[in-house]
Length: 139
Image (cartoon, rainbow, N blue to C red; front, top):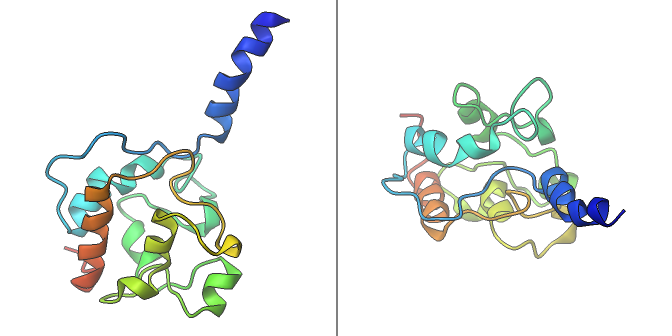
């Protein structure tokens, strides 16, 4: 019984941990779609999160689908849609729900901060912001 209780935190972390988050700064992350998909989005493009046949929030972050699923697309979150946000509003980080989800959530109806169970580094978030500011091109 004690052994089972000792394993409980590990099991909960595995189940609730969500997408793997960067815990150390990524080197060389650039504000380009290619760099972000290879260094940032890849951690959440697993089948348990934003990949596979049924990605969370209908948002696939696999390299071949992420751009089309992000840029100019209304989020599944009802409150974010009502607030006029798109997943990524090219050229406008403040209207991009993706960036809202990467910071501490101040509107409970927006759901949890992403990635679940962790957070991106400041450098990664800056790269995402700069990519959006540049118009979120698919390079």
